[in-house]
Image (cartoon, rainbow, N blue to C red; front, side):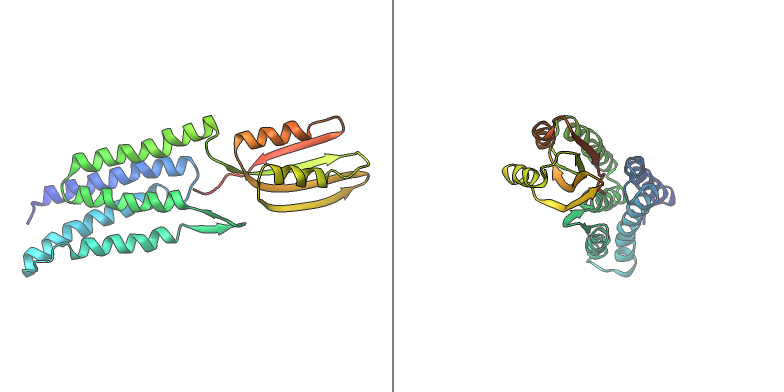
Length: 219
């Protein structure tokens, strides 16, 4: 059996690495923040330690049995973070993060500190640096709510529908309404930066007001 100081060190490292990922989740106001991430990583490390201890104490040759069940259990926990909203699936990044946090905890629990630390760095690189690149270069479509108001006598809705069809965009909702003499078209869709600029360019003219509101997804 490992010395107590080694057990405590492994649990502490697992907790700190999980918390480091959780800080990023909290800063981006995503589910599974610092407390959840810490608990996932710490729990996985503890189960990994227990696998070896129980196998040694009771002469069980299947020392990886508990660890393999941890992987399955984390799958159910991650599935709980995935939701379906307005026809879109959200929470995939959070579910994947929970899954890899458990793996990091298991690595720390096995004493593979370098592996656990390097994996944590890669996860943070993906969550921070790659997310910045997606935002900076418009690589990822995001949910955008559009509100188009016009005082033109002709209806603008058919033009908007033709434009959406030409851009091959599926809307989450499409609403028409009147406000006095103004005609209002509202719709929401997953839009890339290029398509958003195309919509604004094609519809921009005198007498037409376009409001654009990004809807932040839960990753």
